[in-house]
Length: 433
Image 1 (cartoon, helix red, strand yellow):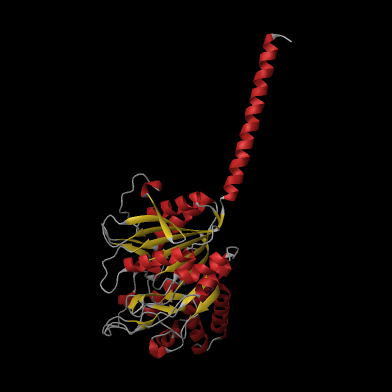
Image 2 (tube, one colour; image 1 turned 30 degrees about the vertical axis):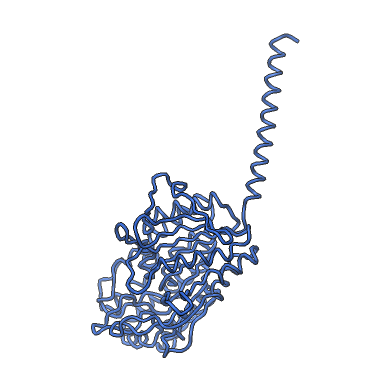
């Protein structure tokens, strides 16, 4: 064997050794990654940066943080919190463990972040959730959004340093970006915010999450002799998850519904709205929302074709379960939302046409299949919602209620519901598009 051949053999042997070591290292890394993968990672987005007049969302979120510390007892369930309080330079990032919230520098997410981030910006949500998933991988993910909500108008209002809000288009863009980066949907999106359980919201999130948990009615926090009363009491909800981390996403969504707390009415000035109980909560299977939407579209088109049915619409509206309370002296309310199932039932009852009854019945059955868990009160005198079935829909009472921004939603683009509103209800004839 000559020197050249010997050198070549030694070189090839070295390559094989390095390759073997590299493969071994990769195997160890893969094993470590697998060992570090939890059953669940709960990603909590606490936006408390508002100028409150009745109570402080910051106080509520600090209480939530303490409740999480009580239940963070299982390594198979991780709790990661981004929290922005109601001042300046008071945004915090935490990994919550039993009896402790370990603070992590915000620069871990983005080196350019200061101590005040805009949580009404979809980029903030995207970067935080992607960072949490990369650093705390799990088999399942629950994204919990907490702040004020306005149904299809959006969620998470941040007022410092400038007022900003996550509208539904921005929320969808953020969650689609997250989905594409992690190559999967979020398992459960929970929304601790008012009025978010709408068919429009569910349809907007259908491509980026599997389940949605939200309320058709108002959500609120109030002071009691024993401290703050919280509807989403996180220790009640997540103690079930830490006790059973093998829980699948649909079961967890139903667990959120079962552990939601209801209490006294949500009071606004009586000249504007009547008391509204915090009594509604529902879990929605987002994979089934496309069929609900298709049936809404079919019903909308039929109601538009039958022009003489316009006479029935006001009576159906007045009989249908509403979530915005009474009207002011102009007949105006900012949140003209009604229960979609109850609307369909009243259409079938009050419109004596077989095809309308059939379409309404199909829609009601589809809603029953889509809403996998739901609770609501039955005492209308307490402001509760006996006609609630889990999903509401936008239904303006007068022209002053109608907001053309509604037409930017996926739901509006893919159905004739907005055309139906403008044609039958607002007496508009130019409803093309």
